[in-house]
Amino acid sequence: MGDVAGYQTVFLGFPIWGMALPAPVRTFLTTHDLSDKTLVPFITHGGYGTGSAPRSVADLASGARILEPFVLQADQERETLNRVTAWLQAVEPEL
Image (cartoon, rainbow, N blue to C red; front, top):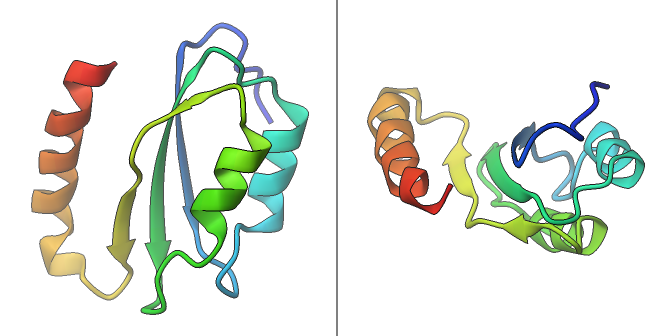
């Protein structure tokens, strides 16, 4: 996993695994110091929502400023481009 020390903003994308944060993302969050960084999560799921993942991200990256995640049900590809574009435009002023 790359070094994030030189970045102020980190986009963190992941799918939901069994209603929880995937193990590789847990490892990333526990092995990188995200203190004083802005963390921008984007999450996909298969229809059951984000489960405990947002709370886990907040717990594991407690020193980071965590923006509201972009969440997309994986089977909604037709809406993806419009929703991602609108989300990025909303996030941009906060960066």
